[in-house]
Image (cartoon, rainbow over all chains, first blue to last red; front, side):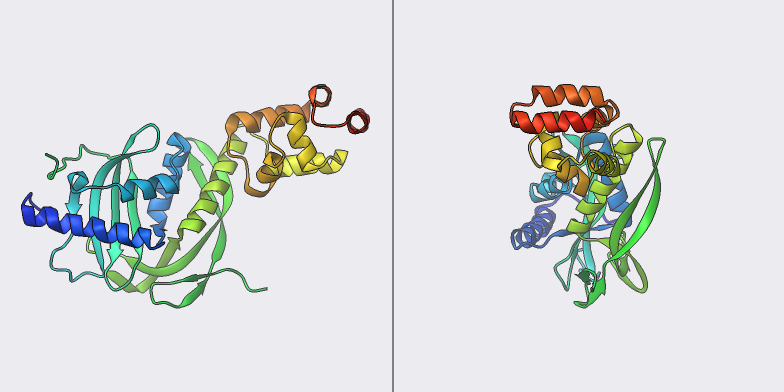
Length: 126
Length: 162
């Protein structure tokens, strides 16, 4: 996945992605899971009691400082995909959260939601 | 009767599908039924849709149902009561779900919820299994129950002592 370097223009691109996500969720678009992301959520649910609502809340509260990788500014893909690091649930479990926004539709598709396997730098953080 | 349907990305309806799943979680083997639908695969690196391959997708509501089924199966394997065990016990002793709930100290609808949606708490699930296996303990709890009339309690104790 592309890594957008930290520039004012790129922060704006990520912010627009997040604004679009929030608008869809506010308009009652619900999230969809792939098989992989549902399996990962099942483990989070058993180990930390993390629910779909926790994932949805985490997405809703993302800011550009959570940015990790993604967003192809060329906008040629069917889905705009972006990955973040965030903490969720009562235990504040750190997770790698990757999802896509359908470009010609409204789907919010979760690709990954699992504790990070490697340390995740956050290029837009401070 | 037609089954549930889900709207795909192409704005066409597709059937909700169901299958048995076998999984290993933390060394525990579980089986449960999951629901899903098929839509075109999306490459998570490129964001491109592959219109040649249909793969499993899960709506939020389907995921919620699957998580409940999976967790219930997992907790049963770890010693919690299964919904079927409760139903069989109630049928055998002719006890209403709401009455069993009250005897065990839960809210009126807890047992009914467990029977319909599965167990969600390991301590509660283990406690219920323990009590159902030990009718003298259940009889003791009938005695403690303040929300049932004395006549009803007497009837229950007679059933449990058979």
